[in-house]
Image (tube, rainbow, N blue to C red; front, top):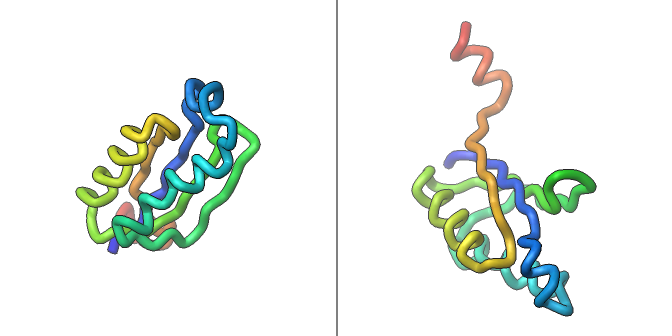
Length: 94
Protein backbone atom coordinates (compact mmCIF):
# COMPACT_ATOMS: atom_id res chain seq x y z
CA UNK A 1 0.00 0.00 0.00
CA UNK A 2 1.08 3.53 -0.75
CA UNK A 3 -0.02 6.63 1.15
CA UNK A 4 -1.26 9.79 -0.55
CA UNK A 5 -2.50 13.21 0.46
CA UNK A 6 -5.18 14.76 -1.72
CA UNK A 7 -5.96 18.46 -1.48
CA UNK A 8 -9.39 19.38 -2.82
CA UNK A 9 -11.13 22.65 -3.65
CA UNK A 10 -14.75 23.11 -4.53
CA UNK A 11 -15.13 24.08 -8.18
CA UNK A 12 -16.41 27.70 -8.33
CA UNK A 13 -19.14 26.68 -10.79
CA UNK A 14 -20.37 24.01 -8.38
CA UNK A 15 -20.75 26.64 -5.67
CA UNK A 16 -23.17 28.52 -7.93
CA UNK A 17 -25.21 25.59 -9.24
CA UNK A 18 -25.66 23.25 -6.24
CA UNK A 19 -28.00 24.58 -3.54
CA UNK A 20 -27.12 21.80 -1.06
CA UNK A 21 -23.37 21.83 -1.66
CA UNK A 22 -22.46 19.96 1.53
CA UNK A 23 -24.60 16.99 0.50
CA UNK A 24 -23.22 17.12 -3.06
CA UNK A 25 -19.61 17.10 -1.81
CA UNK A 26 -20.38 14.15 0.49
CA UNK A 27 -21.86 12.22 -2.43
CA UNK A 28 -18.81 13.08 -4.56
CA UNK A 29 -16.41 11.85 -1.86
CA UNK A 30 -18.16 8.47 -1.98
CA UNK A 31 -15.76 7.73 -4.86
CA UNK A 32 -13.21 6.63 -2.24
CA UNK A 33 -15.55 3.90 -0.99
CA UNK A 34 -16.55 2.82 -4.50
CA UNK A 35 -12.86 2.33 -5.33
CA UNK A 36 -12.25 0.46 -2.06
CA UNK A 37 -9.78 3.08 -0.88
CA UNK A 38 -9.31 3.52 2.85
CA UNK A 39 -9.31 7.15 3.92
CA UNK A 40 -7.31 7.42 7.15
CA UNK A 41 -8.16 11.10 7.72
CA UNK A 42 -10.43 13.66 6.06
CA UNK A 43 -10.19 17.32 7.06
CA UNK A 44 -12.00 20.52 6.18
CA UNK A 45 -9.58 23.45 6.05
CA UNK A 46 -9.60 27.24 6.21
CA UNK A 47 -7.13 28.03 3.48
CA UNK A 48 -6.25 27.49 -0.13
CA UNK A 49 -7.94 24.08 -0.11
CA UNK A 50 -11.37 23.16 1.20
CA UNK A 51 -10.55 19.56 2.14
CA UNK A 52 -7.52 17.32 2.71
CA UNK A 53 -7.75 13.54 2.54
CA UNK A 54 -5.05 11.13 3.67
CA UNK A 55 -5.57 7.74 2.11
CA UNK A 56 -3.92 4.45 1.27
CA UNK A 57 -4.18 3.00 -2.23
CA UNK A 58 -2.81 -0.18 -3.71
CA UNK A 59 -0.68 1.79 -6.15
CA UNK A 60 -0.21 5.07 -7.98
CA UNK A 61 -2.50 4.00 -10.82
CA UNK A 62 -5.44 3.69 -8.42
CA UNK A 63 -4.66 7.12 -6.94
CA UNK A 64 -4.66 8.57 -10.49
CA UNK A 65 -8.01 6.87 -11.20
CA UNK A 66 -9.49 8.32 -8.03
CA UNK A 67 -8.25 11.84 -8.78
CA UNK A 68 -9.59 11.61 -12.34
CA UNK A 69 -13.02 10.52 -11.14
CA UNK A 70 -13.18 13.34 -8.61
CA UNK A 71 -12.07 15.96 -11.13
CA UNK A 72 -14.50 14.66 -13.75
CA UNK A 73 -17.39 15.09 -11.32
CA UNK A 74 -17.17 18.86 -11.78
CA UNK A 75 -17.64 19.35 -8.03
CA UNK A 76 -14.07 19.09 -6.74
CA UNK A 77 -10.66 19.94 -8.17
CA UNK A 78 -7.79 17.91 -6.75
CA UNK A 79 -4.06 17.92 -6.24
CA UNK A 80 -2.53 14.63 -5.08
CA UNK A 81 0.85 13.93 -3.51
CA UNK A 82 2.47 10.56 -2.76
CA UNK A 83 4.02 10.62 0.71
CA UNK A 84 6.30 8.50 2.87
CA UNK A 85 7.04 8.73 6.59
CA UNK A 86 9.81 11.18 7.46
CA UNK A 87 11.88 8.40 9.05
CA UNK A 88 11.86 6.45 5.77
CA UNK A 89 12.82 9.54 3.82
CA UNK A 90 15.71 10.20 6.22
CA UNK A 91 17.06 6.70 5.58
CA UNK A 92 16.80 7.16 1.82
CA UNK A 93 18.85 10.35 1.78
CA UNK A 94 21.29 8.97 4.38
